Length: 364
Image (cartoon, rainbow, N blue to C red; front, side):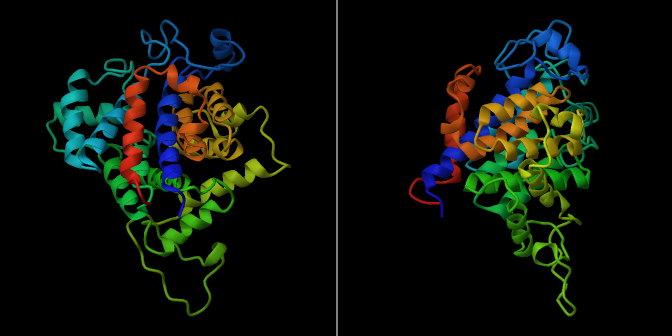
C-alpha cells in the first residue's frame, strides 16, 4: 500500500486541480472561434483572466469560481462536515444555498452562468415542486463529474462505495445511463490515480479487474486483456446496471495515443479539435484523458493546453486538473495557481480535510 501521506497529497492535489481548472476557464470560457479567443487573450493564456464584457461570466474577476466551482465547494463542505456522502444533506444545501439564487435562466445566479442540468433541476424542484429523485434530466454533459470528483477522492480507497455514491449523486440531475456510466468511470479513474497508479496503458486493465471482482458496476463478458471467453467459462455476474465497460477502456486508449510516437497532436491544445470543442461528455473525456496521460508529471502544461483549446475549455480544464492533480499531488502544483485563487486558504483547507478523511492518519 502507498504511503498514506502521499495518498493524502494526491487527494488534495485532485481537488485543488479541479478548482484551478474551473477558475482558469472563467475568463476565456466558450470561445468557439479560436481567432477571437487569440484576439481577446493573446496567443497563449498562462493564468487566470477576467471575462470580457458581454461574454460568459461577465462581471466576475480572475481567480473567482464559476457555478461549477461553487457547487463543487457545496459538495465538499457536505462531505467534510458529514465525514462522507450524505445525499439528503447535499440536496438540502442545493435547496437552501443555490436554488434561491436562480430564476431558471442561463445568466442568473452565482458564477455568472447556470448550466442546463441545474436549470432543469431548479425548474422541476422549485417551479413544479417535485421531490429529489424525480428531477433528473437528459443533459449529456460533464456537469455531474465536475462535482462528483470530490466523492471519488473521498472514496478513492473504496471503489465499490465510490461507484455507488457517484452514481447516486449523478442521477440527481442527469439520468442518462451512458452519462452516468462515463461519470462513474471518471470517478474510478480518479480513485486509482489518488491511490498512486498512473494514467497509462495499463490503467484500464486495473479497472477491469475491479469489474471482475464485483467492485465496479459494469458488465463484461471478455476475458483477461479483452480476450474472448473460453468455451465453458461461466457467465460473469452482472453487477449493477452499466451494460458496457467501454467507459473504463477509454483512458488507456487515450494514454496509448499520447505515448505513440506516430501520433502527435501539436500543439497539444489542438486536442480540442481532434475530439471536439463542444460540451458533451463524449467530447470532453477523451481530450482530458489524453492531456492527463501526456502531461502526467506537468500540471501547468496540462491545464494550460486544456484552456487554450477553446470551446468548453472550462470543463476540459476541470477534468484535466483533477486527473493531473491526482498524479502530481498538491506538492506538484505550482504555487501561483493556488495563491491567485479567490479564497485559496479556505479551499486548500477543505481539500486537505477531505484528503485526511479519505486516508486517516496512521494508515491507508
